[in-house]
Length: 511
Image (cartoon, one colour):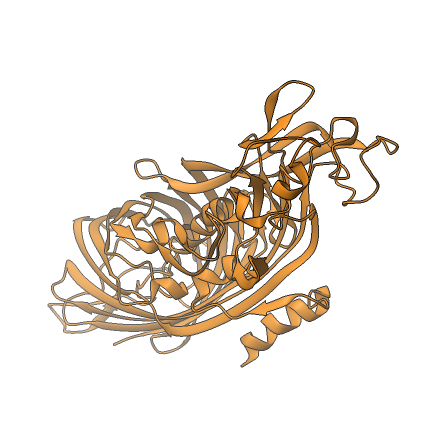
């Protein structure tokens, strides 16, 4: 209830529930962005809800201002979609979806590791630190030992490629042909650029429970099951076609070539719609196997692998929608205690995650509706595509102040899409355009349109990039083998979807 209230408050505080805006309800969380864009269109006397598109007259060739021009350009059946909003928003949605699928999980490593002394039967502590938080510990917990743990992480994503999620702009670059002839050149007009404003609020909360069992003295297996809460709110507004006043004065484009409404002069639209949805459920089941291959008092090396099973609902961002495997290796070093009892334990691990095809790695597609060719609306379906592979590495150290307190610092890195890329967008600017002033005035050229530029996101297809974070944590042995931990994850770059500061709280017990 609290998280749903946050989403509603987000819109209220931003003043986004403007009069005349359509509040839509998406069927699932991954469709909220496109659902927020649905608006009413009048097509041949029928009202339909569709994705905003730029329409152009392509049905019957006509010369601007001559002959049957008026009758032709006011006939909605002569118009078709030139450049659909769905092409751009689908690329953005795919990037967000895949970014959500690679968020880091806390490690199921035990805080207190003990071994049985074969001579005395006594339980003796093995390492002098309480272990890392996000990086994998090379030590195994020991034959017959159990560990149970729980952690909570809350992500509030506020930026996408360095731009605020509340202030995104999508750019349709235009240059599609029309059937309207420019009398000055005798050649067809082509469409001009258009922009759409987008705002999003994306939140993800993850509670994960782990249980680990020591099968042998050098091999253990862990099982983790997260509960995920995903909440997305979106608004689409401020559609603008860079066609001056829309009456082809002083070289600006005619609304017959670029319009939001087939057969009528609409080159600016302030509001389209809003949508929000939140879902909670089980995420993807994680199975981890780890074995120690080298162990001395000063260094331990382990290899292992993660198997992530698609038990979560991918369409609601609760899971990734496909099986993932991640082989990894981990190294832990232990110094002898200094005179003041401080122990330094550097650590390093590396792994490479590979995933199959998922709806989160594909592209959303709309359903053809209405009487205009290419007009798209809900319900939306998705193709399947490979999720990006992720080469992850981490390096850091634990500093133990006695046997009850450990501080941890790490640098975490994800090299995303080295083999299977991730959908992304880039910013593009087009200059020398007639700024949209709305359809007014006449065709005499009395009003000279202001000139400027249009800037927005365009699809850049499949790319690869790096993501880097700093992690600072603290572990405390409360009583017996009960260990509590707190951590803050700080994002250092602006690539993809960014949650700048992520807190983590956890607790674990060994027995």
